[in-house]
Image (tube, rainbow, N blue to C red; front, top):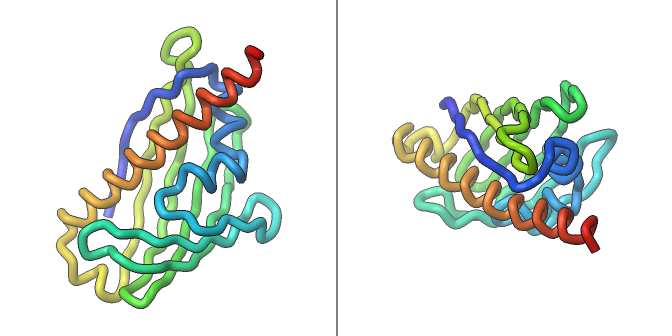
Length: 153
């Protein structure tokens, strides 16, 4: 399953980069995150409770931030398991200033699913992935705005 998207965040690339890699901002932005605990360098254990379509339930996994090119790109590697199945994937995040004070984040990724997930239509899973990415970036936008406001005060 492939996922992709483009999202605009209201700050310069440096601020967006710092926010995207901040564990507190990530925990507040990942849909359904119940815990987000450091687990090595640039790695985190995560517990999620997701309630979207057939993907309802509690999941545990690991998130690793790899291939960092400061202020321009990084790879997010995710693996998780729950009673209904497992997911494994990675996505490349590429940042570029789209206009002064605004950064466009391009996301290109791929994932594999197993268990009950694999029985759910690929079309449905693609829609769920897009919905979760939209929620993530909506939440991340709030984190970026709070960081910009704090810097201005």
